[in-house]
Length: 357
Ligand SMILES: C[S@@+](CC[C@H](N)C(=O)[O-])C[C@H]1O[C@@H](n2cnc3c(N)ncnc32)[C@H](O)[C@@H]1O
Image (cartoon, rainbow, N blue to C red; front, side):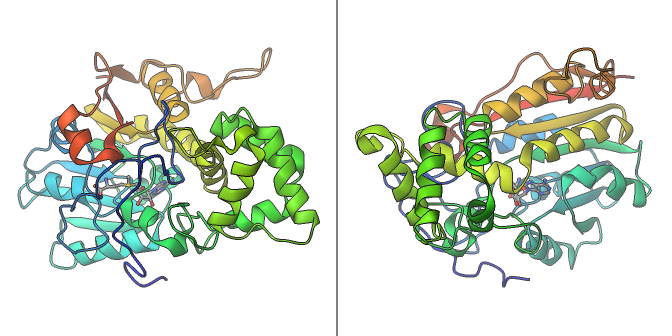
């Protein structure tokens, strides 16, 4: 396990420089603000994470004394702490994260507080984890705050961001799966192009894929964040130097989503939730990317989790959420003042649905 907060840097984020994260509009959420990353709630210095839409999320989770809650994405626990403050001595929070550093932070919080149980797991496994804890069908709210945390983005050795030079890793759990560098070393040009197009909506996907493979064929491994960013900038017409957003933004977001299988995780996690919640229980999801938000929106309105079921095949998955949820009226976005204080909140969309009775 990595040491907690190893190598974490407090960064002043330059305009137009963007980390490997995703956005529905031009500027991706983390790291494109013109000010410093704001101090988080944890007060532990360089590696804080400021919880996004905290008041709105707490309103949506609606914690009550004695309630049971699942935080699928503990991060640094900003949302969990606010829930704990409202559930009294008999309340419970089951906290999960796939990142060992986040799990270490959660265990620290849980040490003096027996109301929290901590699980190092992916939220694609939330059905099993909650089932094994004996809480299936007894949970009052499930929270998913998708994407990456500030500590992940700000630590060069995690390789999520081209704001810092570091090994091209991008795994949320560095102990599982293959790194972005390993994937780029072995994937075909076609596969790289497909990932950039489908997960990054990158128009120059083919050119970038070709440039990566050409570099590889010259015997130079694409192994660092800055190297990849430079290859992408060179492949994109004009180098994207005038663009408000760095030309490598979409490439980074696509590779991160691929290496962590983010959309598959989201689909599996969502599909489990109808069996976990009590009637009237809440599903609360914060997303930072239009691809994620589309999956969440469709799931909540009853279309299940299949993105585009092949024609003429039985749509088994797609019927899973039919009638399971009543979505709240509309998605919510962070206030202007929150975005001004925390630019990493800018692309957040909060969706809430209630388990039908
Ligand atoms: C935006 S942060 C959550 C921040 C948290 N709400 C807070 O207030 O501190 C997202 C977290 O979700 C975790 N994560 C992302 N995908 C996950 C998955 N499939 N399973 C479990 N954890 C995941 C990341 O490791 C990261 O710690």
